[in-house]
Image (cartoon, rainbow, N blue to C red; front, side, top):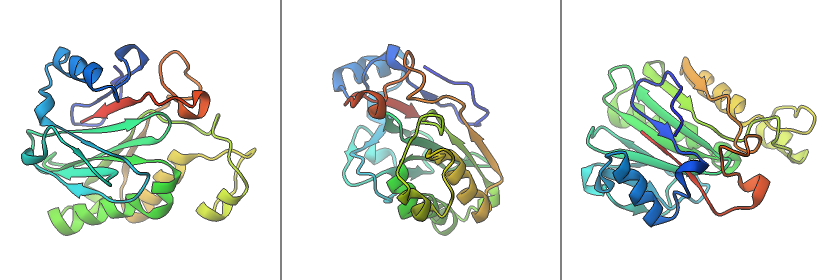
Length: 212
């Protein structure tokens, strides 16, 4: 497991050594070994969209369809995001009363998943962007993320040597919307072959799990 960020809520990202978290049996063994009750964990059947759902204790132990993020004010709930290159993004407010976990690859980022999350914090929980802090956990970094020229139009930003910097685009979006406290993990899932699964590198179905 990887910790190593200043995000104020307890959180971690699994590594290769922890096993494939999409495998239910391996995931259950891992959770129990870390004294996490599987019935408190909410997961999603992620679809690279922009839908974020408000969840509670009643959703614990479930895997929610057509969803790429969760927000809750229920401290008894753990939120989990599967990744193998996409960004796992965690958010909370200054009093730590509300938390979010978001799955964001380029499609979710382009379709407004960050904007949707901030809107829910504001409209449903009366938390303004300046009161939110965010952490972008291990993901594919610009050193390895080669894309086509069309991405310059999608994100209205020039590519550097044909490579896309997902986390910097995410950070820029957050800052424009008013979030000031943003931390980005330095780890690249594609580059760090011993630590992480990477779909771009290996076309693997195996996934890490980021939990808050």
